[in-house]
Length: 342
Ligand code: CP3
Image (cartoon, rainbow, N blue to C red; front, side, top):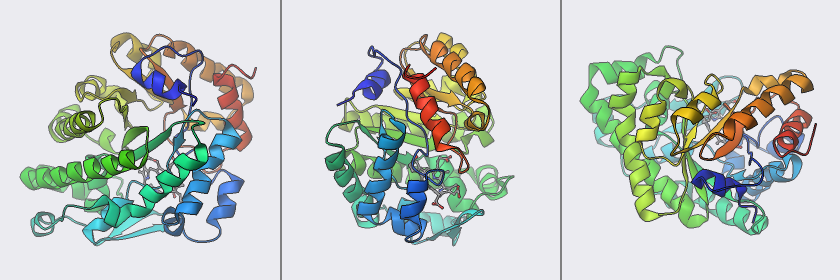
């Protein structure tokens, strides 16, 4: 197996910087569009053969060093009896939103096999099809980001409903976050048992919080997830991605994660000089791929250089690949990082 990704996560030496891209399987790939045109996004997620096929596409098309299972952070929330909807251009919707104490008190513990057994089946298929070529990453939404979707029923640009809960009734917010910590642990553990070689927690919306609120509402839950995952799976790398990581690097470090995932706003070299006992992942601005090849090369190679100062560095974008990205430019980026392109 190409072990560069796992080695970099653990801070072991690698001969070239490993790379994968958040949302590497998605609408920017014509091959994905072809599979996706057979049904809805949810159908695709719930059909293990199809999910397996699109998971593998970027391995061949881009030449990345890791696969990430094709699924979504919102899928396990169906275990709460809510209806998920993904309609083009609007962002996901959750119906009904979960906001009131009476609802939160009654949230069941979600059985990951019962609710998302199709994800575990897809993982088993992918592991077989990969036959050891590259490792497979499993993932979960982080509790705060999941809470945003549940409480808002989608996302609102001011995050009023989730903040109404945090600042109006913090103890109820804690109960919801505790339930989501358990959900993330159960969901991730099932993925590792099915074959995932590393896991990533996505905290897309944690950057909406002040540093003090990040400490209060986010850090304890992430710490608990990381602690339990490390107890159950001692060698499992856990990656924690925060969009808005720049202000909370020390807090992310404090959670005990193996890899700190950075968005593009922060200087990776600076973080590498400050944090010497964790690996770093990131952090090219995904919109740079809409620029010229020269600019992509200049910026990507700067990040590769900066990454050499880190304990370990996994190249990635600072957020997901955008739908109109040229797949040729994504391939060029992978080749650059591997030292195979000029
Ligand atoms: O990275 C991968 O290739 C694995 C698959 C993956 C998807 N979503 C597939 C997807 C992963 C890791 C995610 C994570 C995810 N989902 C996050 C965290 C990362 C981030 O982007 O911040 C979030 C916030 C979600 C929730 C979600 N799912 C949103 C906001 C959307 C709609 C946005 C859009 O572009 O329409 C989805 C749908 C979704 N998840 C798509 C894909 C490929 C697009 C579905 C389609 O129409 O084909």
